[in-house]
Length: 123
Image (cartoon, rainbow, N blue to C red; front, side, top):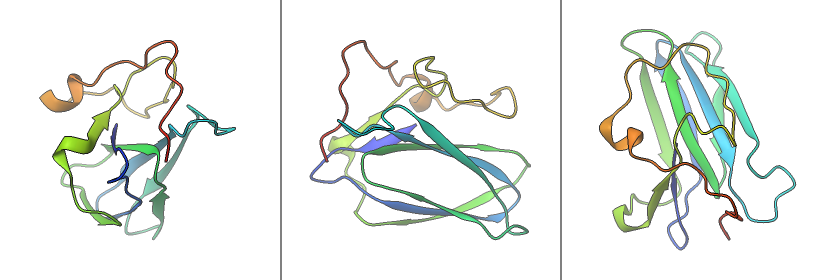
C-alpha cells in the first residue's frame, strides 16, 4: 500500500484496461472520521469502473487475472523521497483480499505495520 507525503501528496485515478484487479484505498488522513478504513472495487474493462484515490490515502491492488494492465492518472509526479507505505496485511487496517497473496514485491514486503499512536498524515 503506497502513498506520497505532502508537499508531493497525490490523487490517483486508477483503471484496469486488461484483466481484472481488486483495487484498494486506505484512509490515512489525520482526524478523518474514516481513518484507517478501506474501500475496494473490482476494476476491469468489462465493468468500466475506475477508482479515485484522494490525497492522504494509501493505494494498492491485487491482480485477479493474469496479464492484468492498469492505468494511473496522477495529480503529482513521483517523488521517491516523499513516498511511504503500509504493509498490505496490517491487522489494524484489515483489508479483506479476495485471493491469498502469492506474489508480493520485495519493496511491498518491507513496508511497516502501522504503529500504535500513528495519528495519520496531515494533508
